[in-house]
Structures are given as C-alpha cells and as structure tokens.
Length: 111
Length: 115
Image: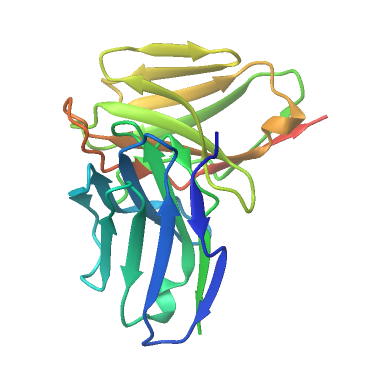
C-alpha cells in the first residue's frame, strides 16, 4: 500500500511568488493535515481537513490556504512568499484525527 | 508561548540500555499525546500515543508514561538500538472525542544510541 506522497520534493521560489504544494493521502484516509517545519524546530500545525471540510487552522497568515478534493488529496497554497516561508512542508493523513502517517515533505526555499 | 516542551535537545545512550525521553506540557486541556521519530530527509514516523484517561501505554520496546498532575510524559525505549538514533518529537492535542486535531509538537530531542 502506498504511503503519503507529496509533490514536488524540492522547490525554489523568489519573494512575492506563489506556490502550490500537493499531497495524496493513504487510500481511504479522510483526514489530511499540513505542517511547517523550520530547521531546528518541531512541525507547526497549519491546517487540518476532514471529509473535505476545514477542521482546524493554526496561527498562519491568510497568505496560507488549502483545500481537499473529493478523492481526499489536498493542496496547500502560499501567496506572496516571504523569506521566512522557507521550510519543510509536511502533509499527514489518518483515518480520523491524529497525524499518524506523514509524507516525506516538500522542501521550499524562498530566495 | 511553547505549550509542549522537550528540555533536552540531545541524549546519548549505550546500545542495550534504556533511553528515556521527557516532555512537559502547559495546557491542561490536552487530552491526547503522541510520539514520533524523524530521520533526516524523511517525514516523522508515528511511534506510540496515549490518551489522558491512561497513565501508561506499551508497544514492543516503546512505553509511554503520562503524569497528568505534573503535566509530564516520557517515552522509554528498552533496549535501545543503534537504529533508534533519530530526532524524537513529543506532540499533544485537544481531541475532545472529535476528529479535530490541532496537534502541537515539541522542539524535539536528538537521540544517539552508541554501539
């Protein structure tokens, strides 16, 4: 069974640009959550989606948005990129709550 | 305001011995706790969890202890193996029996198991 997949693996953008990160959960998992991990810190909660509805949002500006599709895959969008958005973006899926299975992450570098 | 704290940035243990990783939290509303390990260039791997209605949960070599009055939990790994060398994250959430999960992670403890 395939695990959580994320694309792209790495991404380099410049300040002010927009980026879309993608996540495919484990088959049958209806909950997807997104985390930002800055070097040397633990992952920080950005969003949780369950059954295509937003269930939770962390302390991130409105530049961050997400959505979940009918097949439970998800996209994270970040507008007007700042240098501080450089981080590893992690997606996790589970049957119901609790990020049990993480993808390998997307490494975003903002120049 | 760090709600989940892991005060030891690193820990070294001899192979075969017990590894004890500690975690403290400040929010008494947390009712579900998780431990993950993370290797470089990989996403975190879920290890074990515990609900606030329990004080201990065991899974193979991993045991998590929860002391609610002290707002403290610990992960015991017995016996420690070189492959356990990784960064360990403690995390907490307020589930309230729903599927909502805002999981708060600690900063992590880097464990080195010396052969």
